[in-house]
Image (cartoon, rainbow, N blue to C red; front, side, top):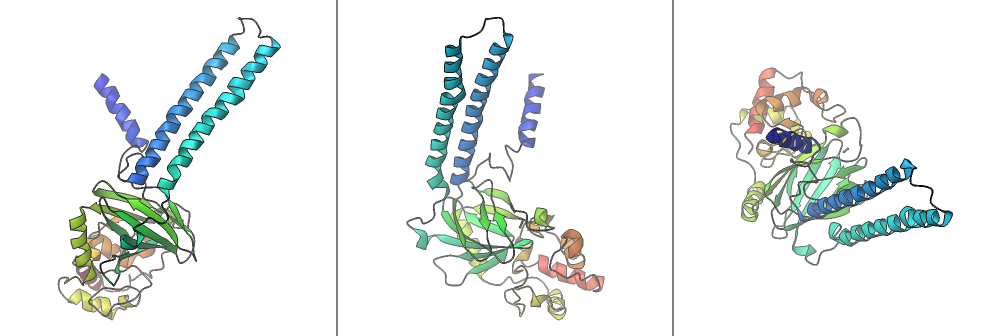
Length: 327
Ligand code: CUA
């Protein structure tokens, strides 16, 4: 019976979001650990205050113990109604302020040698560019962010259209992406694994369909990965590539190593190796690639990508197969 109750409690905690790939209470980074700590301290302190107030209320509502004289009532109101709550709230505020510099490290001493990831929010996807201090040209990607564990990473956050908000709950607090300015965020991931980030500011019809995957890797593995991403993917077969170029997909999308160098839509070099498709909303497979090419507006309303359902099914299949092979 106890086992069943524990199972029910654990289910409740899961439903409440205390664990999982998108939980601020299951931290995998230094900043998120601070946020989780502050949350639990607030919960415990708030619970204690609630208990005290409820006990006093039930004591007072019995009414049998005689009335307090006016002076004692005044003292009770002053201490329990104002002084003690104010003191406790002041303590909590002090603690939160003390944590704050750790949550917003604007200019760390080693900013110039840190890996910088520039993320731009667009309706309804994420443009990603890695600037490694060791290499000159940025590595372009979209809708997936890879990070080295144990290294501080600087994010430069931008928007080209409306306000979006960048949030990786497992790694730290959120930061708005505001058109016309660059917001900075510094995060240190401590645990390898795959996490999820949502857009945290309503930005239009498909706001709820704007997410991204975050993969935290061992630093050596990450450098290898980044180096491989700087070049083109060999891909498989050429028919899909020829059709991709012939149908004009390259006007909006870039694929390194081909003539496709559009910058309107997500960069598709190495798209086959991403875990999700459509900015964190679909599993990445040939089937979902085909669906997205043919019916982007069904999957993502108000997406800027035109539908290509008029293309022969065979062509769509070839293009999807080629894209999936770009690993
Ligand atoms: Cu972008 Cu909400």
